[in-house]
Every structure is written in C-alpha cells, then in structure tokens.
Image (cartoon, rainbow, N blue to C red; front, top):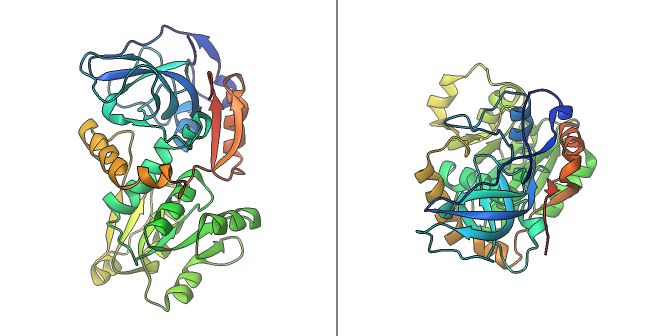
Amino acid sequence: MKAVVLESFGGPEVLRVREVPEPQAGPDEVRIRVAATALNRADLMEREGRYPPPGKPPRFQIPGLEVSGVVDQVGERVTAFQIGDRVMALLAGGGYAQAVVSHERLTMPVPDCITLERAAALPEVFLTAFDALHEQGGAHPGWRILVHAGASGVGSAAIQLARQQGMSVMATVGSHLKLEAARAFGADRVVNYRQEKFINAVEEWTGGVGVDVVIDFIGQDYLSDNLKALAPGGTLVVVGTLSGAQASLNLGMVLAKRLRIQGTALRSRPLDLKMALVRRFLREGWGLLASGSVKPVIDRVYPLQHVAEAHAYMASNQNIGKIVITVGELD
C-alpha cells in the first residue's frame, strides 16, 4: 500500500509517498481502508523529529492521528463493527496511508449525515475538545469558557460543543476573517489578540468575575493572563504550548483563587483512558454530530501526493478549521 513514511526529519520536503506492507488486524482490531485523514499540529512536530510516536518505535513511522474510511477486515474478538461499515478512528499514528488498523474501542461509526471526507476531520479535534471541556475542565451548563485559537480545528469544535451544551464562550483569534468565523461557530464574544488584550475583554465580558475554564494552546506567553482571567475555582486546561513550554508561575494567585492547571494529551494517554474517553463521547457528544448540531470545519482538502503542500499551508497559520488529506475512495 501507499503511505507517507518519515525516513528523515525536517521541513515539508521530507514527506514522500512510498510502498509499505499492509497492516493486519489483531484480535481486537479492525482494518480500515482509508478514505481520508487530517492534519494536526502534532504532525508538523513529528515531521521535525520533536514528537515521536509513543511506545516501541514502529518499523515504518507514518504520521496521522485520525482517519475515516470503510472496515475491510475485523479481528476475531471484534463485535462492534463488520466489513463495510463506515467508520472514523483515533490513532497514535499511521493515518497517512491507504490502510490502518485501529482498536475497535477507538473506532467510531460515521453519522449518516457526514461524508467520509468530512469525517476525517472529526476524531482528534472533537475528542480533544470534549476532553478539555469535560474530563479536564469539568464544565457544566451555564459556565463561561475562554477558548484560545478559536478558529483552529480544536477551537472550532470546542466552541460548538460548549454552546450546544449550554455554556457561554469567548474566543481569541488573530485576524478579522478568523474573528467572523469564530462568531459563526457560536462564540458570544471574540477577541482579535492583535488589536486588544484578551484579559481586558474577559474582565468586561464577565463583569470582573472571570471565566470558569480556559482552553489554551499557546502556553508561555499566555500563562499569566490566563490565570488572571480565571474565576475563583477555575481551571486552565493546557492543550498546547505554541509560544513555549517554560513560564513563571504565580503560585500566590493559584492559592488565593484555588485554581487548577490541567495538562492534557491524547496520543500518549494509556489505552484504557482513551477508550473511556471515546465511550463517553459516544454517549454524550456523538448525537450532536448525528443531528447536525455540531459539524467539522474544513478549510482545504489536498490529495495524498500533495501532503507536503498541506503541511506548508498549516505552518503558515492561515487555516480556519481542519486541513484534510484524501487517500482513497470517498462516498
């Protein structure tokens, strides 16, 4: 089969399609004939050699944390899926390929109203957003949520989920175009961080009370103002560290306001915890997708042979929503 294999690290030019053996489904796995995959910031880091896959190094290092497609092989203990099912899956890697194996409990049915092309943009970002809101942030209806990078894949998912689950949302973005997009996703207040400080907007929006949860992808540069933005008892959920991972921490503020700082990552999480997250999302979030209440946001679609161009586009930070890579037969 064809796959993108990392034989060296560096810029987008190291991404090349080559032939590798097809994987075989284990007893608890399904093999998916991949229709599409989608880019994540982690893919860029892995390409640069800064984010290796967890566990034992694979024979072929193939990036890709999510796919959609059709089941074409099932393991002997699999009960949830059968050959021909339309599915999407959360992966630890391997998505940039014509076929991939996935544990059945990390595999989800694709709602009838969603195409396989669009479904590829779902697993990583919606599970990350759902996890940040609920598993890490403990969010409830009526809470105020601050979502940074509100026009990103995870940001757009978090805004939609929070709004549909009865929360109020403020988002930060870096351009007028992204500001309008975040409003369309359902954000009550959107801040262009190039034009105003988000901490000032939070104080005005909440009447000085603060927000209950901050979902942050920026890290170092935002830590101080994120803590100031939180209401007493609030939680900062750190999903990424785009500006850097080292920062000074005002422990006095953490103590006085009884704050929580919670880091999260899906790729390195133990299998049983990933399974538990998928089960909860299927119970509480999948129906929102099936009803069309929340939707994956897609910026651009590239064929597999143009994956280097897709990486360069993501690195430019222009995308609103997800960048999808088509691999095989779509609907």
